[in-house]
Length: 286
Image (cartoon, rainbow, N blue to C red; front, side):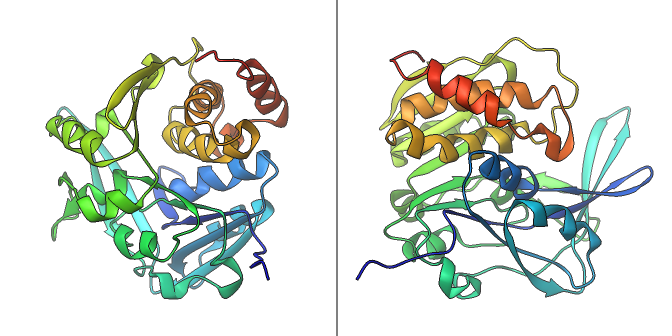
């Protein structure tokens, strides 16, 4: 008997309550990935953790099923700007998330997106328990640490065993600017590694071989979430291109460019944009 699941894509990671001048706004990988997957027509499941009375969770409900582990607070970030540039602070955190928290009806999801924001999950544990899924890790949230002052600092992350089990790893060049040597280690350990570079496109490393991909020339309105839209578009489009990663990377680069012309959950691609780019890449163009 074939195992069934009520979702196509499982997204795991903290939502964030980002402090802004007029209050709080929803953020985090799940906030941008869920509407992107929904735009592709996927049935989406979001596993997150937030304050038990977190009102921002309601913004995710139109895009799929949401399970939130109740916590005393939500993961809360604040950006502070000064002559030294931007500094990011963690003001509060939510609960860690483990495989045991995944609803039974979701454990056979064919696509799994691990999107940690504050090292709240163990990629090795998760990858071990989804042996039949295509598992993607967006790495940025594993490369953060902070002390009592809450100031976010860079920490390198590398786990060869986890990388062997994870199918796709995505991060931005900006994420590793303090440790650029990490990419050399990652590309040797990861079968499919994508390092994004904003409007310059990025590089897809297929078993270590570098393949450049382009973005599109657009006038940006809001860059927030573009990397998450890229990653979700990459995983979300795979069923439409016969799981061809090279085509998926090209499509995701263009959809991420569209996303910066909008803001918030509206930055997710539209069905028309998806159809146009899938058609464009039906050949061998990259």
